[in-house]
Amino acid sequence: MFNKDIVTAFEQKETPFFYYDLALLQATLDRALTEANKYGFHIHYALKANFNERVLRVIQESGIGADCVSGNEVLKAVEVGFAPEKIVFAGVGKADKEILAALDHNIFAFNVESVQELHVIGDLAKRAGKVAKIALRINPNVDAQTHKYITTGLDENKFGIKTWELSDCLDTIKSFDSLELIGLHFHVGSQVVDLNVFKSLCVKVNEFNNWFDERGYRLKVLNVGGGLGVNYTDPDGEPIVDFKRYFEIFDQFLERKGHQEVHFELGRALVSQCGSLISRVLYVKNGIKKNFIILDAGMTELMRPALYQAYHKIERLSSEQHNEGGVGMLTHYDVVGPICESTDCFGKEVELPESKRGDLIAIRTAGAYGEVMASRYNLRNEIRYVYNDEIA
Ligand SMILES: *Cc1c(COP(=O)(O)O)cnc(C)c1O
Image (cartoon, rainbow, N blue to C red; front, side, top):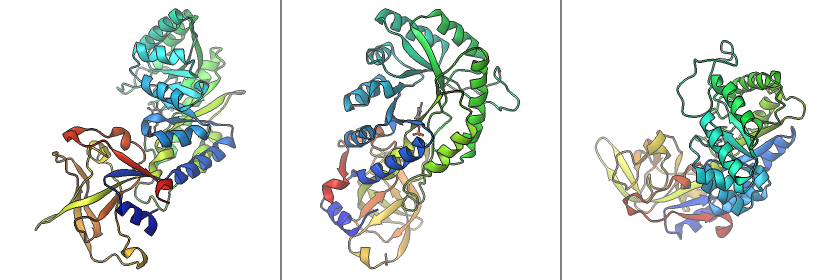
């Protein structure tokens, strides 16, 4: 990903910063759209993965929709130019103000997570003289073979509506002229790399879809959420995820009734690989048991390792050794940040060329859930970013 010219340009820059390759982002979007369009599938981008201004703009211009999880994300999506009829609003704790903002913009759908939320949205919409379009977010976390439609045996989970609450939901929706049920929504998790999970999801969606159909509901929308995982260990080997297989699975296993639309909410799969965190080595500490590289970037720039013990590939960048193939002696380092927390560590026992103060380090696959989680802890500087077209 980083040729000699790019590394030379990085050497002139103050670190740390996020580097975004908007060309790779564009290629990723193109591939996703090509594969989704084969089946008439609709894609929404989950803004929470990355709402960097230019990243958002490229995504908006591709024509896909937006998936928001806060009122501010809805407002941001509208501001950037996403068509309101392509915006969905999910989240387990929507505040009144956020609901009103979304109603005001006539968004495509609220993904509703509880009976109580239906009442709140119903009341607010009524007072605003609006009809809120609703997709019920169902927690499908049941064994489809043994638990059909109605069950009391669901896992504890703050997200989604439990299957035994569905009748209650329908009664509530019926009692409000200001609510219109348009579909069902699911989101099983994130960084899903075993595509069989999506086959199981399809099986469950089909069951719920039948349940509603049997009760006379002709639902327009099946929203199967996001969660498609990316390759953190080999970002150069797999810069774009296998959208072909992903969408094929839904085409093959999801039973659509009539003209039912299928919607997806992809975050990570669209933006992860186009971003890297670029940092410099501040200090090298060679110990008896461990060697440490201390970077000028930390958990304040990329929190995933500290928060989820997430793995990110770490590389040393060098314009000098780039053409020679050789990287010199390899050493094992714990690669850590400067923040006063022991969890501020990007990787343990990372094999790297012998490094020195001033060397550039790239932390890869940082385009999703990176910059958006940056904080000012330790009164750190605001995060900086550099785009590929600024240095090419
Ligand atoms: C976070 C989120 C997504 C996107 O998840 P990814 O793993 O980034 O694809 C989609 N839908 C909802 C409701 C979410 O909360």
